[in-house]
Image (cartoon, rainbow, N blue to C red):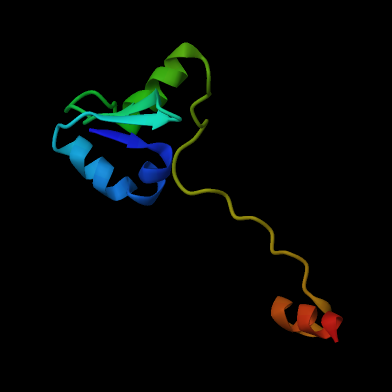
Length: 94
């Protein structure tokens, strides 16, 4: 199937459905092929856990030092007079 960018923008769901059913969808810009939609095969896309572990192994990111609950943050400063933020902003706009 061939679709222009304009058609693809307004019918993306249809084109993705066609690709998911195994049909290759060629996207064109002024008659020139610029992209292709195709189905993803099982196992082609790694799960997030494996990607994260690979990044840790490569040294691209660091694993957290500790697991469990995050430490509690200190409360934010109170707004004047105990008002809610919505009330404070509304008062500033008056």
